[in-house]
Image (cartoon, rainbow, N blue to C red; front, side, top):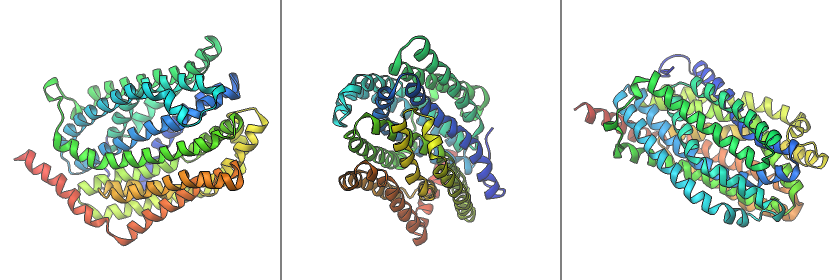
Length: 456
């Protein structure tokens, strides 16, 4: 069900909204990790390395999708906060069209570039064929991925975090079952886990579409209405493209890190894959808190409740610090246990545990990054979020190789937390200067201006 965030306790609203998002993100991480767990335990270290070698390339596409859908989410949240349901539906329709176009384009280009991209990343020859097969199948499923992420982001912008969670839980369970079926029964190996993921994503997208058309009359539309509103598309692009470029840029920097890691062979690649998955699992509530702050602030900006916007940010910061300090400590202590989830190889576990411990110490910095990025985007102040991402890009792209040359693969783990720290500092300074407030006037004028035009 949709939720109006323009009244009530900010702390309570953000917490209650973040919890189902957190559970959903846990399942999303499990969804992503199951491939690694299954091939790592039932196929072997080389299969795990093949899946891991694709993570940078595919995360680039996923970052593009998530960044673009964040633009859709902000626009929907602002119109919903302004009680402009006509424009909510127009934004929803435009978002579907944009998502379908992006999904089809990425599928075509991605399949063509799968092998050249992996060659560019220096993927070892002994895992190349499996890596190409995995990445190609994942690219073919991009349209389903786009549709699910687009639909779920719109639902969350309306304050409904429960339905996307339920669909994701079902898709995650389906993914686990299909992974085991394709690997253990049909012996399909790495291509099997990729196919399982794509089929599960397709089911998620279909279920979202069915729910919207049955349960949400506000978003229901006919054939004649299925056309883009170009003013809305421009607003989605204004917010979403910088977010997509920022997210994609960070993913490109991860690909540079992957190239630095690939030089050390399949054992270190598998260890990095395991450590990265463990980090993502531990930090998924940080992402949820940031998204909750963005939705809360977006709705209240649309409603011109600017005092509540700042209260929402402060509540999000308190929740984030409490969580990241606690979870960072737990990740540090139980790094070995987390690493053993993905591999039984002692060498992989030892290296992966080291990676987890380094990133765990800097968990609060990542929490700040998510909070300030979502806050600034909800205010329409997208340029600083690009600079935040550039900080991460430079750290990962440059420092990964520099630290590798100085300290071996041990040094590569430090590039990411340095990037988080720089990014968080930029976001904090932008907030403290108050320059983001100038964007509030432009953003609210855009929303109320559309209201006047459509009403007149």
